[in-house]
Structure formats: C-alpha cells, structure tokens
Image (cartoon, rainbow, N blue to C red; front, side, top):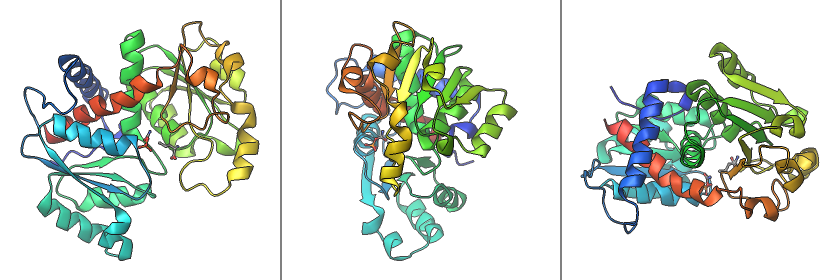
Length: 306
Ligand code: CP
Ligand code: NVA
C-alpha cells in the first residue's frame, strides 16, 4: 500500500508519535555535523523526491531538499508553471508520468483537492507541502520544537492567535492526535472550517474558539501566530483591519505562562501579526522551528518509504 502524507488527521496517533520520535533521534544523532553529510543509515539511498511548487516557498523548498539529501537521496524541484501542468495537462496524467520517474512527490498546491487527485492516481507517496486547507509538515516541526524546549506535548496548552485557515487546521488535527489543548482566537469571519471543528469534536479534541485573544493566551504554554494575509488571499486591506486586535505583542505574551514559547511558521510580517520584541525576544523559538522542518520532514519521508 502506498503511504501518502496528506494530513495529520489521516494518520494514527501511534504513527505520528513514531514520526516525531524519529525526528528527535535523527536531529540528536547529527549534532555538529555539516549539513550535507548523509545520516549513517542513509534510509533514502537511491530514492528521488520530486517537488512541485504552485506557490512561493523558502523553508519548505530548502528543508525538503536538505532532508532528502541527508537521508541519502536526491531531489528534483520545479514550479508548476514550468511544467505542462501550467498549460493544462491534467493532474492525473502528471501523476502517472512522475510515478514512473521518481519515488515520491512533495507538492505545494493552491487547491487541496488537487493534492488529493494526485494521491488518488499516483503509485508513489505524495506529501502535502501546504495547501489552502492544511500544512501538516509545518505542525510536526512545531511540535518537535515545543518538545525539545518543554518536553512531551501531551497535556500542554497551545494558543493560536490569528487566521483559522491552513496552519491552524493542521494544529486542530494534531490536538486530537497528540492530546494537547488548543485555544484559538480569531476574528468572526476567519474561524476554522466546520469540517475541522467537526473533526475536533468527533475525536474529542480539546479545541476552543474565541474572538478574544487575551482569553486564548491566558496561562498558555505556547503562543503561535501566522500571517494575516496568506498566499492567494486577495482581501489584503480588509484582513489587516479585521486582524488588528490580534497582534502578538509583549502585552499579550505577558498573559501566557512566564516561560511560554512563541512560535511562527514564517515568513513573519513584523509589526502586523507579531512585534519585533516578541519574535526577536527570549521566548521566541522560531529559528529552531524553521530548522526542525528538515528533521521532521526526514521522518515523514522515512515513514512514507517504510
Ligand atoms: N513555513 C513555511 O512553509 O515557509 P515557506 O513558505 O517559506 O516554505
Ligand atoms: N498561512 C500561510 C502559511 C505560509 C507558510 C499561507 O498559506 O500563506
């Protein structure tokens, strides 16, 4: 059976715990190594990962490339506009062709449905590198970061301040699978989808949604922000106005636990969703978080190939 990594919600708690443990172990094993050195077991030796981008990326692009190399494999990267996909070749035909040429595909897509179509036809693993609906790889890196600073994620309280869209959705899925509490604060028009909230209640996840950022952050172990204007959002000015009360600044951080961590998937829009004082301050772990994209994704790739 082909193992795709499309959403955290698709995997069991045991599989996800195994992935996170592998990420921790691989990071620890290569402490101090040059970034291009291959892990001792080279589990992806002779494997090629294709990466397709329909949207911009810095972290996802470089971390997946570094990840597959550290696992002993290789990568081929393309933007969708450079491919015949950009001229109307179907997702299904693309899936059939690439399945003959590479061993796995990571795709960053405008539409989540297109990733599902790719996975339905491909005979190799498909990995979701962000869609309009979710960003599962990001959340594994985030959980790895929290665990390395504060221990097991189980039972912790995480506060999400901002848009209830893709990154938040993957946190909702993770709250169910990793058993932590997630307090979401967002403006009325930017709440998580009904489908994600239904998933949370079906899986008895401790997820709350409020319009009050102070209520969400009070006593939290971790405070998280994301851009107010995601890639593809056209209503820039309207969003800036709606999200203005949702800035993570020093005053808001002061309501969380005194040793609370600050996370942001990046890129950050300083002065909008977060102040310089918070993102550059002592509670911020955003650079560890960015690095952990490599380690977490190595574990995801391993899981897909295992
Ligand atoms: N966090 C994240 O996915 O960053 P990029 O958009 O740079 O890949
Ligand atoms: N929510 C953001 C995340 C970027 C990594 C976006 O979709 O643009």
